[in-house]
Length: 485
Image (cartoon, rainbow, N blue to C red; front, side, top):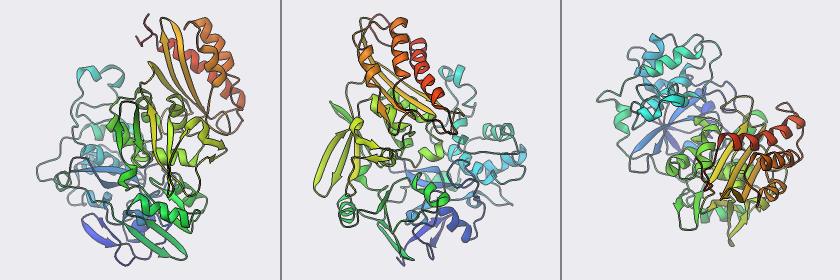
């Protein structure tokens, strides 16, 4: 407890005087690093962005942008971060800061430090090169000639400057100069996991060294709150004032961070960040590849995990509909051993699941082979960085023009994510044509028990289900052999 510390802008700072619920943002500001701001306290605005040193998987480091307002300060024990103050100084601006200043990319300046950190993460991204000709067309406005991907900034909001000067600043960046200390830092390993124990004010934060130790803790204290990326619990702490006697952090446990392709299944570790999953899968599970860019923002995906998304059991979580369509299974582990449950049986009620208090989600298994035809449709008020009103995952096999199998996962239309069983049954055995699709769309509209809220009415949600299937048919044509054209 007396030795927990974090490296901030190259200096080792002790994490003194913090509680288990203290966020990295609050701690940074208390230490005098007030560049990071609180705009929303729920990871939607990016004003609090900082750079976290993470492993590139090959013995080097990646500068990863994350929301400081959601990361527990205690979770930074033994880690290394850079804030906007660590990028440059008024006398020697960092290239990102210089481009923002020259291009008029700041007015009130409240959001600017967060933009600078997210922009710096992309500035230092390995492999940032000019787009190939094949990446022109639809993506031409998203990737600059300097290789900067505009979506790297999609988790940052600006309310007064306007985005064009900010975009122009990003697109004007060159490569890091020789001797750039943050560029050179990428060649050395990122900090490894550190077991952490903090107790203050009747609250405890514990990061155990192994899964076995975590399970022993859960067996003794089943009321502990388990966190990985903390992108959901962090919102409860900030906006709802929730506190836990024990916060159990599992984000660094190697046993929960594996990803493997076997003959029968793809297994994805529960504590692996979504951005890392996307990178490692590299398009080999197309349905997830379509989902990930629509899941929140890069700042969130850099921390959020499959285990956390399924553990919170939100009926509007984006992952569950896609995983239901993929017939995923959840691997649960306790001190008594492992068990595997079908995801369609995992949800038992609103934010309730089959997981016992003494269990951890270890992994998710997706059976192979994958379906021929998959798609993910998300209906929300914004194209990116928004919560779904309705989410639909499709996975179909069509043989000689006839639907051989159909799996459809739904989110936002009931107290739990669910499979559209009636629609699936109607589709199987029928010709994949507009008549079948229209019949199935009318059945799909009646699946679930949608409610009206501030995001959408129940009627709208039902109508969106039907149109999602029609959209799939119109936008994903199949060849005579039943494979995507």
